[in-house]
Length: 237
Image 1 (cartoon, rainbow, N blue to C red):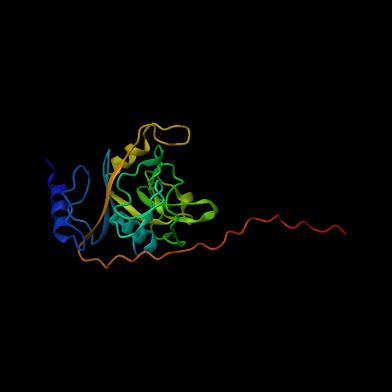
Image 2: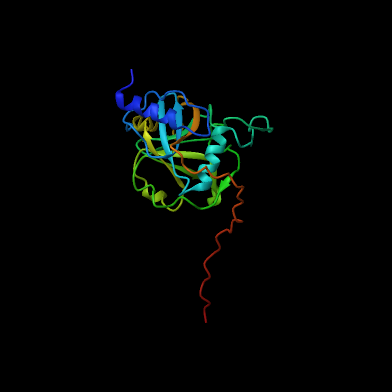
């Protein structure tokens, strides 16, 4: 049986959900307040429990737009196994492909390798005012050459300030922090891949209250990569 605060939050969420199908009752997310501020929230159901995240469309509009569109099945993508363009709830069934104890976990690649996600990108954004100085943040990863993924995300369990200004911060965890900590602490191989698969069963996005509509994803092409060049050496007289 859910506690009174969690039950109250569930009723408030169901009553105020807009634009999307009414969600099932949230279960197993400890520590949620009885009510949540108006805004957009994501619920990640994992094999280890559920995680609730407040999204930050004002701070990182394209990171949120791509994440939400993929989660809701509003955005097509190339199936890495067939090469065919498809659609549907992209994140349903993906596994956590990296976990670092007390630090973070990463997911969002349907191949489970961290290298096979669709090549969708976002512009530099989401660096402030909420950043990685504190724990319980959600951010987008980086591809080689500094390209910011619009698909592969990570969730932090600790303070990681060295990521500030490098990765978009587009959400903060408001429930299920113990689940985040548990996932980061699983046994891993030398490359931080969990030894036993941890599946994200579903990701859904909900409105609490009447927030402004979420932005639509806009295709972004990063500027060409400029390789580093040797530092000019002084000419000897």
